[in-house]
Length: 451
Image (tube, rainbow, N blue to C red):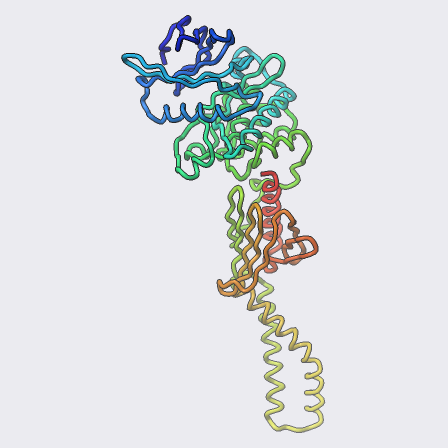
């Protein structure tokens, strides 16, 4: 894109252009001197005549609006927004404080390669900025975290610039925006579908760290099933490599759910004590249905078919034996045969049969529950619900606060613990299924509590 102005031109009778800081699909950013204050500023311009898509102007105006509402020392302050009309064109300008230092991209081009310690310090500062952005109401998602947009000063100060791709969550949710914005190699997979959430910015940070450590674009690194395989390209500790891997998980739900969580782990204030779901495998043949988003999980445990459980077969044989025994006793009574031996035999069988009948009834109940009883566990940010359903109709349920629960894998069931209360579920599951399911639930709870 050719610049519309020459160095030395004065815009709006105030800003004298001194240099070009950068240019892209949205506009050109100049360095300028504010002749009223004598300070250096960044002046970003979009020309109406050069617009090929009205979406560009919408993004530019949104950037100005969002910047005017931000207040963070690592985000250059918004100063002004105006337009200038000429006979043949209309140009829009956004004025910001200029960020001291050079972009990470420029530093790498000059030969700088970050050490592990430098990369960690940089990550901490960027995460502090993202924690601020994502904590706003509504959360502000940058959507274009990359080396060109992170400025590093000589004193170690880090600045985040270029909010041209910014998105606020409310607008995306209700207006159904599907604009694909970002930079290839640094875009999370969900951005190709026009979707973004706070964890999207974490992916961009992880890809940026890989660029610093390898001097290669993340798009050029080996990939397997959308996952960047970078360990052979870097010389860093396993802990830091695992932390970066979590940032760049292809599935949103497998990443850290917030900058706050990622920062806590990196600072050593919290360990990743739960396995990420990408390392868990649902056992072959399992019919459990698990639906999960970043803030809600629903588990459906269906009734088991007859051949799904050896226990069910054993219980069936046990029930059949006791039914035959009861029929035999009834036959003696109804036959009219009266003799000492049969009466003694009947008395013995009746005495033994009372607990047997109780056991038999329990076995019948257990057998039927396996055939017709299903279970559903629902967990979200505030509450949990555990339901038992007979033939699809809720027969019983318990509910409580999510913050109060923990999940355990007992020998015969999964157990949801709420204070002194214990609720068992999945008693008919195989051990491998219980282990997988409880690990998935604890994984989800661990991330949920750091949202």
